[in-house]
Length: 260
Image (cartoon, rainbow, N blue to C red; front, side, top):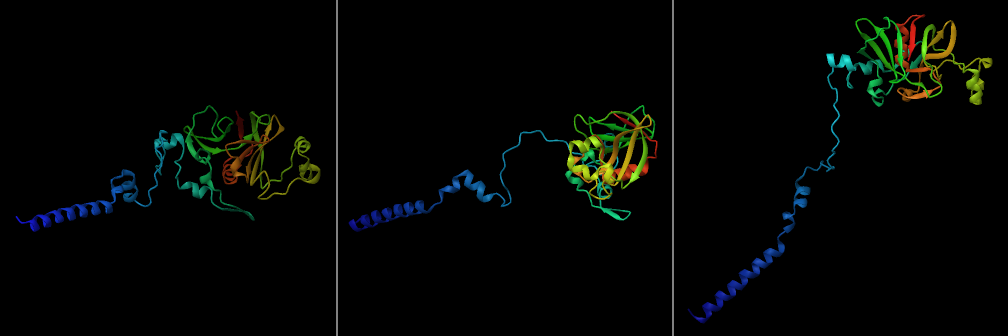
């Protein structure tokens, strides 16, 4: 082998090494990084969230009657809710639709299993759970969510619905006016507050008497749907306006009332 052949081979080998070095300088070694690979190959709509270790909460999703929902109430997605709580034209007034999806579904109107010694047709108010039951036959009841009196203003006992009123006039008791002087304009001496959508008694009122005396407590509607399931009132039993209309049509005067 001549000197020129050796020199040519040496130069070729050096060139090859240089090419490898250049190739190494252009290689994107970040592809070997797992985080980069994951970021570039994951779907664009995916956003990583830490794993929630909280056990999942069981959801009821069946749409139709079953022994399960008869015991525990209608499922969250029951289509009856749209019909129950949609806009209602009542006499010359229009009640707006209630955003029932913002209300705990336990407090939406539903037929449930209910065992009680009270006779059919009795109204039972469970102040601990914030439910009103209308007792029906065969161990059933219509159940409604209610708002109740805050501590110190609640009433419990037995009475009757002495009379009922559509679109009632609201007259605050004298002791309430004493606590809240701004209500004086609605006192009995001034004729009370006119019926209407803003009236605290809502679309219907049922007046509870005991031993022939007015207890001053009412079962009534309310425009404040956020108060259902809470203890915020001055003692009366508040219902969603659409629910109190439903109850009003189901019960006659002299209906028994048990508040416990």
